[in-house]
Amino acid sequence: MNHLPGHPHVHWEGDALWMEGVCLAELARSHGTPLFVYSKAAMLSALAAYQRGFTGRKATICYAMKANSSLAVLQVFARAGCGFDIVSGGELERVLRAGADPAKVIFSGVGKTRAEMLRALDVGIGCFNVESEAELEVLNEVASACKKVAPVSIRVNPNVDARTHPYISTGLKGNKFGIAHERTLATYQRAAALPALRVAGIDCHIGSQITDGAPYLDAMDRVLELVEALESHGIHLDHIDFGGGLGIDYNGDQPPAADALWKQLFEKLDARGFGDRHFMVEPGRSLVGNAGVCLTEVLYLKPGEHKAFCIVDAAMNDLPRPAMYQAFHAIVPLHRTADAPSARYDVVGPVCESGDWIGRDRELAARPGDLLAVLSAGAYCMSMASNYNSRGRAAEVLVDGDTASLIRQRESIADQIRGERLLD
Ligand code: LLP
Image (tube, rainbow, N blue to C red; front, side, top):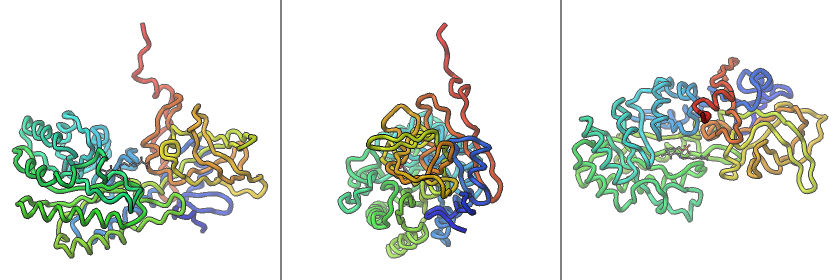
């Protein structure tokens, strides 16, 4: 077998690309394109690396479902014992529908509404990750009004030095996230004094697509300094939540493996006497990113004076990351053919925007009607997809061994305009 780099569950069988026991071109033919296809085994093997890292510890892995919130994907993680990190009332309803244990749900995000807090209290979520002093006051009011006590953790901003780790974007002063390091003690003291709140833990999240373990270790040091300071003031923390952010291999990236990273982090935790706490993590991308591909058909080849374009039927509404972050996704044909002429193309979609590109300057042997796979498309693709240009969102298939299940049907125009009203 001949696996694609970074994608152990995608391999060549002869000249055809397969995921687990399923031929991807056959899926594209039976379900149409664009089509997202996910490998269940890839998700579970990414999860297993975290589970190994936590062996013998009290820990909850809360899948950050914003990465991919499709119900069947949530079910895979719920059945594997995961908790969930949510950021909206909509995400809460999705995890409940997927069979999650509400006690393992944590609620992050800077702008929770009163209605969202109320519903989360009602179903008994595990913890609110509070991001501002104002939010603490509102949560206390909402919980008092319904005679409940809200478990809280405060998201601290460790202000990890961006000069050494410039790709970290959420753990710095100047970001909208978390409570500033110097306000932490005062904020916890306020939380402890409010009658309808119970201080449960501390959390931080320093950014996403992190490929170097060093910033985690720096942030861990800063968080543990805070835990020591808080406990010396009589504020006990049951859990320490280390957020998400571990990167994946998009283009030869080499992020640390989750189990190796946690081994290093536990050395620090044990050395400082915190190894017996309950640990939480909120991984999103690293659990699903390389479990998914997006299949697309080549519509037209368009030679140009400066550039040649390969126009495909997937677009920025399906795969928004290149347009939004200049992100790289590898693109490979579903069939290797010796006879197709190879050329350099910008791979673009049909949307009427110059920003609608999926890959730039790619060497491809492609002809109209050929099928391509856009790799690393399991995270932040379908969950960020839109209806721009009134394009229906793609269908999704979950592969488990040699079984392929349709987990979301292609969105029809009737689906798109449901809820709209014509004028009288
Ligand atoms: N926890 C919190 C509080 C977060 O804000 C995030 C992601 C996560 C966990 C999960 O992070 P992950 O393990 O997936 O890196 N749309 C962007 C990524 C945005 C990440 C937002 N927060 C992208 O496509 O690259």
